[in-house]
Amino acid sequence: MVALILVSIGLATGTILGNIMMQNLDAQIRESASRIGVAPDVTAVDALSGSRQEPGTLLVLGTVSGLTGAYVADDESVVALDDGEIARILAAIEDQRGATVSLPGLGEYRVLMPSDRSSFSAVLGKPTTEVTDTVAQILTTVTLLTSGGLLLLSAAIALIIRTSLRPLRAVADTATRVASLPLAEGEVSITERVPESEADEHTEIGQVGAALNTLLDHVGESLTARQRNEERMRAFVADASHELRTPLASIRGYSELSLRALHQAPTAPETAANTEQALERIQAQSLRMTALVEDLLLLARLDEGKELVVGTVDLTRLAVEEVGDARAAGPDHTWRLEVGEEPVVIAGDAARLHQVAANLLANARVHTPAGTTVTTTVAYDGDSAVLRVHDDGPGIDPALANELFERFARADRSRARRTGGTGLGLSIARAIVDAHHGELSVDSRPGDTTFEMRLPARARDEEAGSGDAG
Image (tube, rainbow, N blue to C red; front, side, top):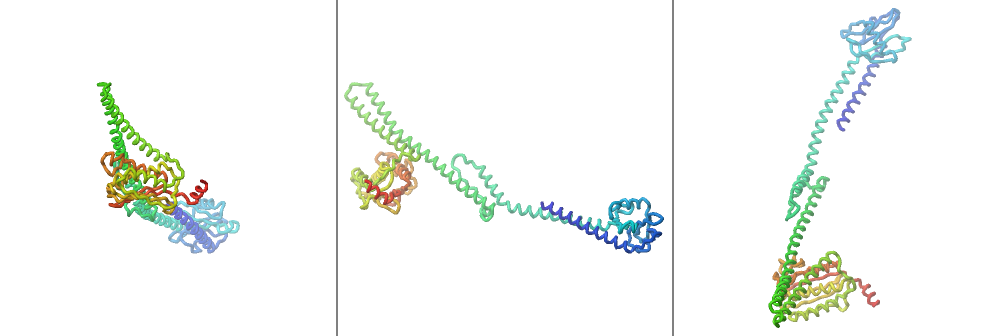
């Protein structure tokens, strides 16, 4: 586009200047015509000789003896024109008052008929060499300047483009390196980033680099989360398999023992006793396995947003009932209850919230030594209803704090039924609270551990309305 503009400007300049110079040449021809004296018997040679014209001036006259023509040579001598040259000049201006004609041996001439041929039968001309030479010089100069300018402009544009696109090349190089990484499986760490110097957010390309860095951060976090989920899933499958393998092995063993005893001595009294004991163990293990499967099914349904039957729940009454049950189950602990005079009412699933409170209190009972004081508090806190379970036991191992609410997580790594459990209690509690759009958290240090369940509180006017309606 720049080259086209510059060439157009050069051509336009040459054309306009050529027209102006041609007009000046016509003016010079008319001025020369005013100095020529013409008589019926004067020839062109005589007229040019007597008027002192510049070299190159050409004249054709119509006299009584016919047409005569002559021109002034470079040495200022006057040379006559032959009939062919005269005829060519007259043919060039046959239909117009001025024209440019090429004469062999003389070059191009600008010829004019200064006045009406009826009154002054004369044609005067001057060479166009000066005009063509000047226009040629101008066009040559414009061409050279245009070519040099285009070369300089090309170099400057190339430098500017390379400098401007350097951040984009850094973005492309970073994207290429990331694309070559194996991201499909396994633990993946994306360390490639666009350099900070090329990610200036004040420029458009820098914003692209910054956006790519942000995207890579998110992708890296997603891949880390994916790997963590895969590891948790593997651990979940392993733990679930272990939990199910033990009761299944017991069921198989006791059933084989019973069948063997029946085959060996079907009527013996000790066989009946052993069979009854084996069936009791089979039933116990079946119940244990059923409870585990039900817990897993509950977690799956809660993850899908199901399994809740929402109604009005008196959180204060719920805490009183669960503390009473916990006191009966753990008489070697000290149980305290702190509630206000007014009931704390929320909207939720009463059965599932009972399960949460029971899990929190059971957790405090199982994982603290005898004599530990467990305090349950229920109160409003702004727009939330809060149930806290606090104990002054040894606290939670900091190494387990981040995975305490994960499935099959245990404060006691043993598989003992007394202290190990299945490791699903707190994960179920967290899932139930999340389904109620609440939050379950823990704050623990030696001698001070508090589990807090925070749920959206029901508006006080709704409580009053419900009480009036009741």
